[in-house]
Length: 125
Image (cartoon, rainbow, N blue to C red; front, side, top):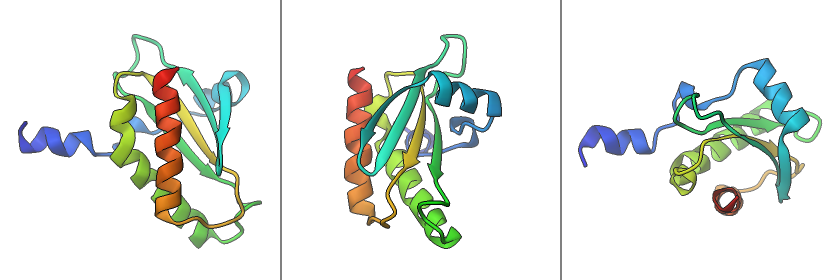
């Protein structure tokens, strides 16, 4: 495996992010959902003719976590955990929304355990 493919395996590029409002609305209205504390997960299978990668949206509610600094910290922790563990769902084409629902600011290790559990559950679906 060359250096470039190693880097790509653990990257989190712009292509992997969900930003279109239409897709976000579809995910929240038609997506399947489940919970793994401190997350609510929404997901849908992607079309076969779409990109060949799973796409992700990460959200931390300002009504739960008031401080923007803390919200951004949580989002960075979630992104990093997803980036490291996304190979668990490498055989799936999914659109996933991670909704952080706790008011508590969890450490990276707690978030990482939850993300691993979520990705394992998604790989079995």
